[in-house]
Image 1: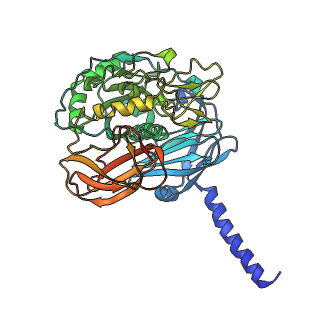
Image 2: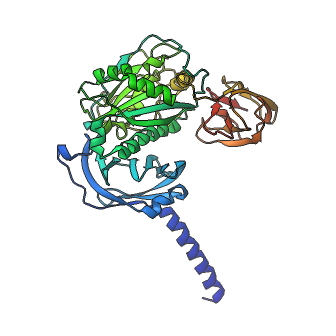
Image 3: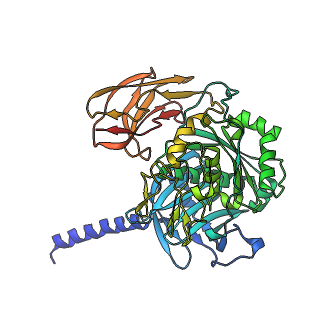
Length: 489
């Protein structure tokens, strides 16, 4: 072999090594003990099958936002690589990494890590098992979950009649963002080993919920505006605790102080996985925006997202629920395969793992739709109710989109004027387009005056799942996007 060929070969091998190294991913944690079936008293979750202590590579954690792929070591020698979908950096001590296992294959298992104040809470859907990472004291445990061991929720509670009560702060936010206050009991703090650990779990519950919204191509995201210890005692009755939470003066004051649209309590009780008020009629009622969720179900069983779903007007699968705000607001299941966030497991005679998806007939998982048109579509229902809920408490500034918001048709290349209004915002705005129902966004106008009007021209491929979003550049948390997908032709 001549020198030129050797040089080319070495260059190829060096490049391949780099590529293979990237595809392998960075190992963020390692098993520190052998997976073990724990006693009931020692379990990190009511649904724990086996647990192992894990240790995190702090150098890798420090650069988590820049990691495109993560190698995940699970039990029985199984290792998977998760490819990054998105990251959120809320502060130097508070971030989220979100990705998928086997992004080019069939499984598309979700991986969500929350890093907060030195503690990690996580959720991993591997091809053959679901795992939760639980912070306890100064340790972390990887817990293999038996989803059949989770109790169902205690049922929804019929809320007060719909009543649009003006926010104490005045104004109304967009349904792009709903602010949630989480309170946790002393028993939760004790079981996890401290406030920082409980707050990490609270943020992970939010992150897992948002993952479900992203997967389901929904417009809204929930934001944690506070995670606080409550003086409320656990009673062992979820319905009693729900009533106590709603009537508690200290909680009401904290809610108003944080301008929280919804209030969610984490409890250490395990009689069920949770309970929440059902929204009821259209228009919503801020007095119905309360939930109680078992800490051991909040993340691993997606029960936090499930109970918020009741507050947002959604019901279980039709066999196990009635009276959603919209007639199509039911969960969905595929016997022997999976069920969406709002569905019970009862109808699945061959089992169905709960996955981070709300029912949506336009979204495919494991090769089949995750809903039924006009019958099981929690995503559509929640997108419709989001603006009402976001208006329960006003954050202080807002944008309201006035164009491409009702499912119309937009012609490519043709000039079109986008209209919006804003309140208490300085600085310019950005205009973006999504072609896949709010999953990914492309910038149309990077920087324009916040004067309520902008002429745009949409190019590129046609789609039936387009949405427009207007976002403040000075306060990126403030935006508004299309409630209903429109068509680009």
